[in-house]
Length: 370
Image (cartoon, rainbow, N blue to C red; front, side, top):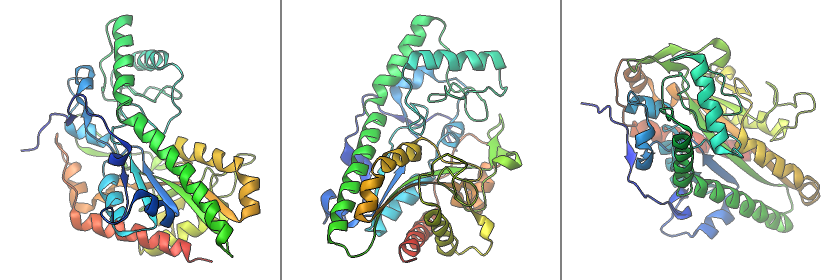
């Protein structure tokens, strides 16, 4: 029988960068060799699911394992780990902590205590189970995206300070390591791209990909993930690729894009071929999401390097992939989650392998577009 109890990481668990980095032939290749061969860094900021045990006391009592996993992008981890095994052109970095510790695809709060205080106040004002606007204060959410309780509000100010301090301390052992490792890998791979350009007669590319999934359904109180999202919030059949632009990948007014429009359009076409979908709307651009913090910050860094990269013939890009979770899971596991329950199914290994090979085929096709 599936357990309702949340899945915990043992208290005191500390992650090192090597625990978070995956690439092909790790037994025979060093990280330096893998980076030298790669032109794509994949990051999964929401793939972790196990909650650090230190945070257990702050969880709402009705928070089940199904709600826990639904609040993550846990379906991305097995797919991208398998992709990294079969593709020597990518390096993968994975956040070991769930987004409830702090969401690394949001800007880091300058004052975590003040941000949490405001988030709890907005949830309280909205009332139990009601939608609360957490814009700007959702780096740590007191409620899930279905607005079910996630964290218990402390009884007093001292309790809120202790909650904020505990979250920060726990993050230092995993989430913070992920962010530093991701940023370090980006800088190292950019430097390697410039080195390759000095020896190349053609253009050289480096792309960073922020990899996510979202379900087109939300949860009910009995655990069934079967409430269809509003049409404007639904993902296409396979994936939405985002560069902060419009539905053609072009800039929205004066807003900069994180990946060149012609490049992101070619990437979308490569995904249609790689995933063997006939309907072009199965892969869309910037719908329903524009892409968030990871590609915003990477894009800003690449724009700083713009004059140098243009002179060197180096193309730098940052793109977000938001896969439809129903597509990643497949029909059987999706049907299981649409029924009431408290647990979460194990991934289908055959489907994971198929998806990983389709990701590789998509990016291989993108590279050969010229």
